[in-house]
Image 1: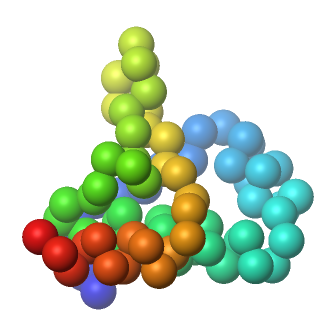
Image 2: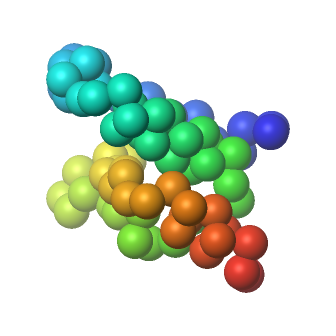
Length: 74
């Protein structure tokens, strides 16, 4: 897939969080980040702007099957 946006992590928080997760959760995180990076439109349930901070967003990792189904419904 071709990238639509560039994702940058904030300080070392992401790396610390990612390392602490199980392999199953890491796989979900990787899949959601790839979809956010390559999809033109992201459902708000998975991607939220952090209030009062310019350019900082929260990516919520839920069941990846739900995101894939939602992505193709628009």
